[in-house]
Length: 433
Image 1: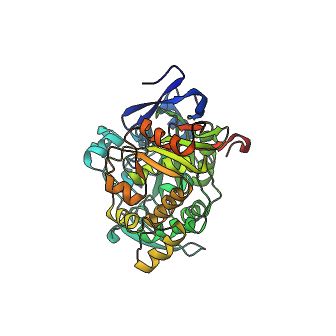
Image 2 (image 1 turned 90 degrees about the vertical axis):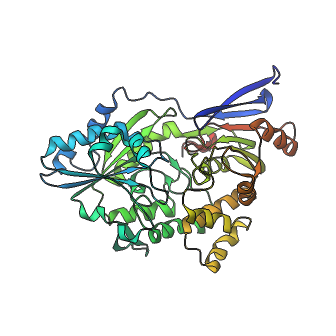
Image 3 (image 1 turned 180 degrees about the vertical axis):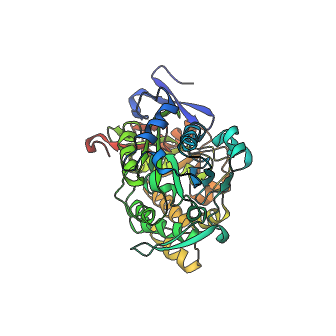
């Protein structure tokens, strides 16, 4: 039972909330997304973005009669409310020209395909019933077409629907991303609708760099992704900024690179969160990235930035689909688990493991295990899953804190990150990232 000197804190955990207690004197800070005012009218915000885009003509000037229009949307691992974004977008297309053929492509990246029910929840019943919607499959050669290489030698294999369309529009969300610096923009293409060879190559670029990339646009993976988009049809990108409650705050449309940069500037007010110092113990929820460990590890990326070496990280993540939704990723991560981070890439090459996206995630997981003690509270991950991943099980957040204080001492300072799947914590003296 908590004493009067304890603070009761809540964390989002899937559709639930977790409560735990921390002595007041031990709390360093609670890192929460910034409070911002949501858009009063989402439809109006979308239409304004389409009519006043950054670096392109208004959408109505881009649509021509008889065109094939492809709309690429993010999948159910992202909270972007496509059911709110798509109706005004489709209305604007219909108002621009007659006889336009519209198709939707779900940018699953390397994730599993969405089920029909998941598609309906993502886009809304009306859109799902009216337009053809296709799940991208990164490992289906029949879906892919080769478009050459980037100047750095990355082979570009993309979904062939892009080359069959006259106008390609992307729609996604802008939040800090553990590998690409920021999600949104060009990520709708890579890894969104690319093949294995392309995705493995871009993810391998960050394996040679030991530094964290969360919140940094100047990293090798993001730079290569943007090179790819210059060589792939993507005529207009819609970037949506949400608040902590999943409400639309800003919508920015236009040329993929410029519109994304503008959306990042706006998103920083929500998702880049100053903290006063490094913590001995970090308690982090991976919310809203928590369908599996492939998403839930994003909470560890956030904690990595603000925990002391040798400290403790307590991660809360449901992971109802366990480690990952694709067998390739499960194999890559489990086959290489337990190895030192600097040996994993060499061992992957020796074993002929081609899934470099999975290898990269294994490298980062090992790097964080080498930095701090990691314990995980999860309903979905089994004891064997956690053993393979190199993490301890916490039977509750309070249980994890008891063990952490035993290691770090009674004066240890605790930082709480409430939305670790999308938050980029930065030391206050560094300013905004």
